[in-house]
Image 1 (cartoon, rainbow, N blue to C red):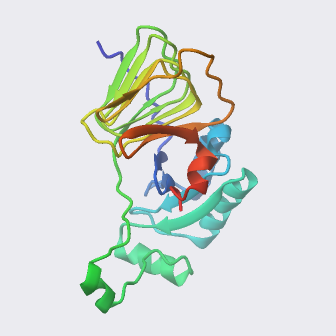
Image 2 (cartoon, rainbow, N blue to C red; image 1 turned 120 degrees about the horizontal axis):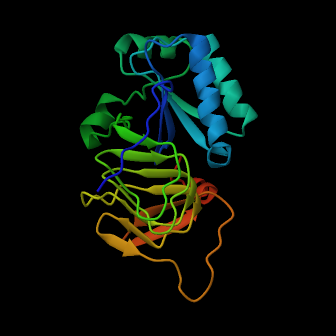
Length: 242
C-alpha cells in the first residue's frame, strides 16, 4: 500500500535533476521577492546536494527580468553553483532573453540542419511527487513521474518512480527509477547506500563483503549494460552535465 505523501503548497518553485544539470522551473504568477525567497529556500535545504552543480533556469511562461536573473545568479554563486543556461517556453520570452544576451536558442545553419537534422536539446517539464519526511521501514512510495524526497529512506522502505529519484538525505532502502523500463532515469542522494538499486530493467546491490561508506552526494545511472554510481562532480568531469 502506498502511503499518503506530504506536499507543500507554499513552494511553487519546481526543481528537477537532469543530465543537462539541475533545472529550476520559475512560476509565472509569483512576485519577484517571493520567487527569490523560494529559490534561496530550495537551495539552502539541499546545500550539499547543490554544491558545484550546474543550473538551468526555465522561465517557462514567466517574463524574464535581468535584475531578477542577477539576484538568482548571486544566490547560486554564493553557494558554489553555476548558472549554465536560461530558457523559456514563450517566443516573446526567448526574444527578451536574447536581447539580454542570454542566447536561449542555438541557431543552426540551414545546410547543417538539412545534413543531420541536429536540434538543440529541449528542457521538458515533468510532474513529480514531493515527500518532506523520513520514510521508515515498511513505507512504500511510488511516483508516475519524478520523485523528490526531503529526508532519509531507511532500510526496509521502498521507493520507485517512472522518472528520476532525488533523495536529499540518506538512501538505505530499495530504490527503482525508470520503473516503466526506461534506462534514461537516474538516482541521486546525499548518501547513496541502498539495499537494492534498480534502473529500468537493471538491478545492482552494494558489496556484501565490506561496509559501503560514502561521504559525498552520488548519482547512479545506466552506462551500457551496467549501473554506474559516482560522485556528482565525477559526472560533471565526465561531461554528463556539459
